[in-house]
Image (cartoon, rainbow, N blue to C red; front, side, top):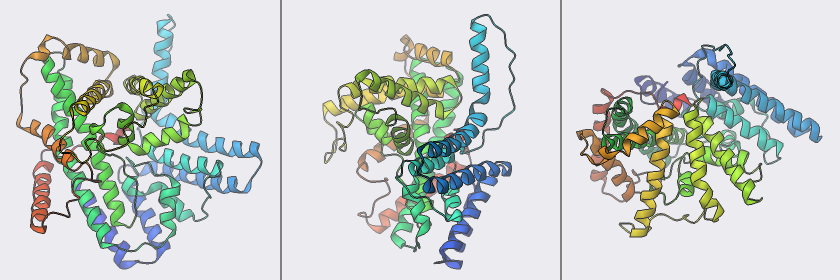
Amino acid sequence: MLFNSIDFAIFFPIIFILYWFVINKKLKYQNLLILTASYIFYGWWDWRFLSLIFFSSIVDYCVGLRLNKIDDKKKRKILLAISLLANLGLLGFFKYYNFFIHSLVDSFAVMGITLHKSSLNIILPVGISFYTFQTLSYTIDIYRKKLKPTKDIIAFFAFVSFFPQLVAGPIERAKNLLPQFMRTRSFVYEDAKDGLRHVLWGLFKKIVIADTCAIYADKIFSTYDTANGSMLVIGILCFAVQIYSDFSGYSDIAIGTARLLGFNIMRNFAYPYFSRDIAEFWRRWHISLSTWFRDYVYIPMGGSRCSKLLRIRNIIITFTVSGLWHGANWTFVAWGFLNGIYYIPIMLLNKQKSHSDQVAEGKLFPNIREIIQLASTFFLTLIAWVFFRAPNIETAFLYLNRMFSKTLFTWPRLEPDFIWLLILPIIEWFQRDKLHPLQIDKLHISLRACIYLVLAMLILFYCDRNNQAFIYFQF
């Protein structure tokens, strides 16, 4: 079920009414309703894959309870291994089986050895990368004795399958979200109002901006071999805006719908394109995944508490695995590796947190130094996005080669819809000190109403011509 669908527009109000007006203040029934709604929400796509999320949930629920009762280190490691094998085994089979088989065959072909491919027609279950990481963090935190397991199986299953963030995040930690299933929730008007604004802004970014940019990004990338370099720049700009608006739009809707049900889930994007270096970008982009890899991959390998050579190794491995998490294609591996290369100089100079404040804080415009920092960081990000978007490594290099040819200095063919490439960053720049751009309580109520109305009308207008699934559903 898509957030930007008629199905969800009918589904969520029914759940909302049942949740607050029929079983209000009955915590166990509220959790059971969320669990039921989440399984309906997920099963709407393909009911067969409900067995996967059920399996992942029951394994980590049981492993968590056993870990809490056992002190023997060897037995605890065995239990952790069961959780890792169960979750990563599912993820590996459904997401990477064909990728590794094809890569193995290609590797032997280079050495002159012919192997027969044994591909399977495997459908990638929506959201599997997200809920497996969510359940894994629960088990790992219990293993590390940073978290106590819950005996409430309904609350735990609802936590794993919580439909607002089930299929594309944010990837929530049990220590933040699970306790919210354990306490009575009350309807708070201000939270609900802010939740609706989150949803409105998320739908605007997805339907109006992301899906519009997707049309041009797809068209330009499919004709890159005949397009001018200037148009290829427009193409990657369109994709950069598309993937940001699409993914952050989903996160905004997820945060908003969760808030309407009395839950607070973590912020996943913090205006990442206003970053002054790559380290700041990764503190602002897909925050839930970045912090997951930091806590469960980078730090366990030694993090920054080791020699420079090992720190470089840790950075490269973390970013490369992060790239592979996004999909079974060498382009994602290259994208992750390239971001790791970008990060190394910052790490070696110990400047990972040198930009912890807001850019041009308290000022209308950035200074010259900040403009250079913003532009250079955005440029590096765009180069990496070429690898992320291209169907294969060869195409990515060909795209970049043609983009930087002499045709780069020709005038591009402009379309009216390209205006969104300017409007979105302008809006976000002036609201960059807010959690989201629709925090406009200081404006007069009539002006606020006009803004909401214009956004709603734009969404209705564009929803007829734009109707694409969220990009991160494929991850």
